[in-house]
Amino acid sequence: MTIASLKSIFIGVGGSLILAVFCSTFIAMEKILFILPLFIGFNGAITGYRLVEMLKTRILNVSLFSFVLGVGMGALTFAVVNFAIKYAGPFMGNTFFLDIYDLFIYMAVSGITSYLGAKLAVRYFNL
Image (cartoon, rainbow, N blue to C red; front, side):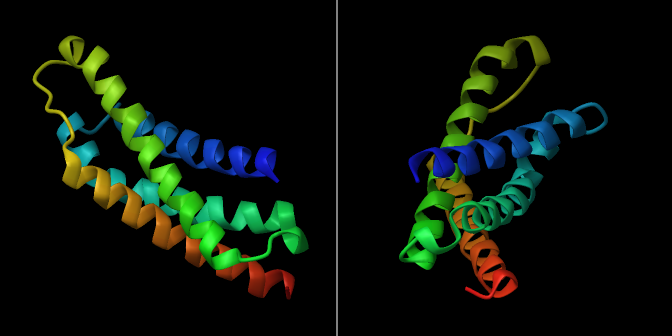
């Protein structure tokens, strides 16, 4: 169960980062940080869906577990993005750091969409 959870989290974080890097080729970094919650929301839903798809009947409380997993994905994405800004920011020009409000936004968006993605998977697999 732990391996499946970690795979789901890393799929969500990796997807968010891949979308951000792809968009950074034609959008300014400040704009990407503004629309990053959309990427996190989409990948949060994928995280919840993937979790239910992998575990199906082995998960007891789908709603709570998917929400907590989504919140963890949002926090991990925040940490990775802040790390990337800290070390790659001086090479990219004038960038700004994320603050605690961004962390709460990332965690809330990811948690809610992960919950919704898990509910969609439960309905799809008739669990």
